[in-house]
Structures are given as C-alpha cells and as structure tokens.
Amino acid sequence: MTISFWLDKNEDKPKEQYDVVIVGGGVAGAAAAYWLGRRKHLNTLLLDAGTIGGGASGRNGGFILRGIFAYYNKAVRAYGRETAQWIFRFNEETQAHLLELITRHGNSFSYVQSGSYLLASSIDELQELEESAELMKEDGFDVEYMKEDPLDRGYYGAIFNRNDAGVNPVALVKALAGISSFPVYENEQVYKIESTPEGSLLHTQNRVIEAQTVLLATNAYMPLLLPEFRNLIQPVRGQIIVTRPLKEAILDRLCYANYGYEYFRQLADGRFLLGGCREPFAKDEIGYADILTPDVQNALHHYLKDRFPEVAGASIDYRWSGTMCFTNDGLPMLGEIKDKPNVFYLAGCNGHGLGYSLALSKLLVEYAFDGASPGIFDAKRASLEKARA
Ligand SMILES: Cc1cc2nc3c(=O)[nH]c(=O)nc-3n(C[C@H](O)[C@H](O)[C@H](O)COP(=O)(O)OP(=O)(O)OC[C@H]3O[C@@H](n4cnc5c(N)ncnc54)[C@H](O)[C@@H]3O)c2cc1C
Image (cartoon, helix red, strand yellow):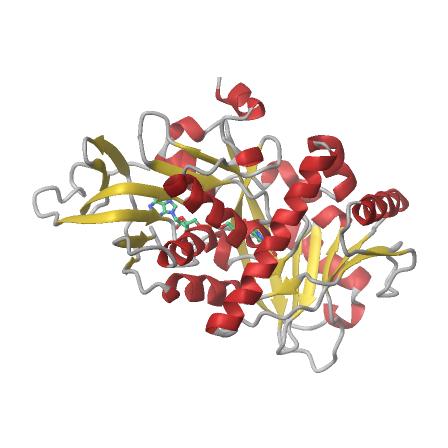
C-alpha cells in the first residue's frame, strides 16, 4: 500500500488525536470497538479503507461455527488434545457472547441458532467425523454423530452441532460497531504508521491521526500495510452464489461439507446460499482480486446440480468473492508490531473469523490494555518465527 507525492495532501491534513484507533472495520475491528466501549471511557476511532463490513466480514456465508478449519481429530493431532479442546471452548465463548449481546441490545443481525451439520463427502471423511465426535464427547462437548446422511442427498453421514448459528454478517458488524457510538470513518486507508514518543501517527490520504494505542484488524491486508507480514499471511479468495428466493423449504440447518470446502444454507427469505468449491483450483484462488473465476463458478453450479437438482434451475441473484486470511499453522495470530510499541494486531482466522470474532477481539483488547497473554495465538510462536526468518 503506497501513496504518491501528488495524492498525499500533506499541508492541508487536519491532525486529530485519539486514545485508541482501530484500523479495519470488519468483524474483528467492530468487535474490538464493542469490547472497548464496555470499559472506562477511551476516546476511540474506528476507521476503514472502504466501508464497514466491506472486507471478508461482509462477504462470507454468515456461519457462526464452534469449529475451526480442521475437524477436531485433526486439531488434536496438530495442536495437542488440551489446546484443541481450549480452542473449541474459546469459540463457544463467541456464541455465548453473541447471546448476551442479543439479550442486551436485541437481535438486529438475524441470528438463528439452527445448528449445523458437518457432512461427510467420503467414507474417509465420515471416519474422521466419527473419531472427532468421540474425542469431543470425551472432552465434554455437546455433539451428535450421525452415521446416516441427515439430508438424504448422497452424503455419508454427519456431525450435528446444535449451538451453531447463522447471521447476517454485515448487520452483525454494524451492530457491533454502533453500540459504543464511537466515531467511524469510512474510505480512510492508513498507508503509514509512524512511532512517536506519544504513541503513533497514522497517515491516510486526508488526515494524520495521533493515537496512544492502535489496534490493527486489517486481516488479509496486513502485508499491504506492513510488508514484514508477507511470509506470514496468505490471502485466499472464496466465492459464493445466492439464488432468488425459493418457495420450498429445503434446509433448516447450516451445512458444511467436504472438510468445509463446500458450505450452504437457506436464508430466511428462501434464498439458497452456496459457497466454496475452490479446492481443485486452490493455486488459482490466491490473492486480493475481487473477481469471479469460471472454474469455481462452474464447480458451484455443478455442485447444485449434483446435490440439489431442484435448486439448480433457479436464477442466481448474487455472485461475489471475498478474501480470507490464512496462516501457516491454521491459527490466528495476535501480537504487537515489532518496533512499534502499542500497535497491536490480530489476523488470520483461516476462514472462521465469525466463529472466533467476539472471543478473539476480547482477547486482543485484554492483551493490549491489561497485558493478558495471547496464549496459543501468540504471534511469537515458533511456527511463525520460522516463517518470519
Ligand atoms: C467467501 C467467504 C466465506 C466465508 N465464510 C465464513 C463463515 O461462514 N463463517 C466464518 O466464521 N468465517 C467465514 N469467512 C471468514 C470470515 O469472513 C473472516 O475470517 C472474517 O470476516 C475476518 O474478519 P476481519 O475483521 O478480521 O477482516 P475483514 O472483514 O477482511 O476486515 C478487514 C478490514 O480492514 C480494512 N483495511 C485493510 N487495510 C486497511 C488499511 N490500511 N487502512 C484502513 N482499513 C484497512 C479492510 O477494508 C477491511 O474492511 C468467510 C470468508 C470468505 C471470504
């Protein structure tokens, strides 16, 4: 991210001062604003390069899942039993925070606790789901293993997670951003952060903003602002299609199939949402371009024809793409920028940022203001240090 001499209106720039500036108005930044608003008063600004929710947060499927990119059995193998258990419990906290939010402020974001099926698209996947369900039960999680396909559409079986929920993600971000009544600037891209004895100076094309503390919630875009993140973050494109409203009720659960490479739900107005299908084309679906690629669009169409033939003929009212943020080891990272004191960040939810959202942003705020440990999300962990080197 650069700015030319000609565009940079240096002389005319108003200088503003805040205690805290949150850069990035996706679900992570908005949730950080929500948590900050519940503390003693801190003069806080939330700003975004585009519009609030215009990044991945407004382009996802709206699934609030307890799970992460890996099924529980794989998470146990990758991170150890205790850590896997901790992560899944951590994401249950997001679900609990959302219920509390609804009690306090109402449900303006169409939260529906419909439960989710994780559907096996192969015998191997079914075995993984069975193993996951057994391990989860032993670890005290509420989960149901189904050895038959609950949809009767050619899947091999499933796991049922009853507390998973669907939302309108843009409405959720707006609700979170609005509760604390902090000022919000849209179309203000930070292109430089300078450290000063007082804190940081954030430069946008139109303003210079001084802040004692900065929370970066810029997710996949981190390397564009701070090149040292280049080896740590991979921007990955996901694509979604949504049909016109259908008269028939087809699904009453959120569905996540083939290890999450395909996901679908029916919305309250009857529209059918299908996303994913990038697995065979993974190497082409890297980068920031907001485009639709014919391979993935065809694959989405074929998926509908194969699994939901009654939906395949319906006109598609919306097609879009969004940029996910993947890390080397599948876990988000939370840290303080080297040589920039009091500039904290969180990024890299690997396609599960709604599920992590409230719990992870709460941890970011506690890390920045109370010195809480980022725990397993610590950006100084060994797997990331290796990539950094
Ligand atoms: C197609 C798709 C489907 C998905 N489905 C799901 C799902 O169903 N469930 C789920 O849990 N997750 C899902 N995800 C992932 C989820 O959307 C993300 O993990 C989550 O939205 C990340 O939130 P964020 O706030 O960290 O990032 P973002 O929403 O990407 O927000 C980052 C913001 O920072 C702003 N920004 C960047 N650089 C700057 C700068 N220099 N100055 C100012 N502002 C800047 C951007 O404009 C952007 O608005 C999906 C993602 C995609 C793309």
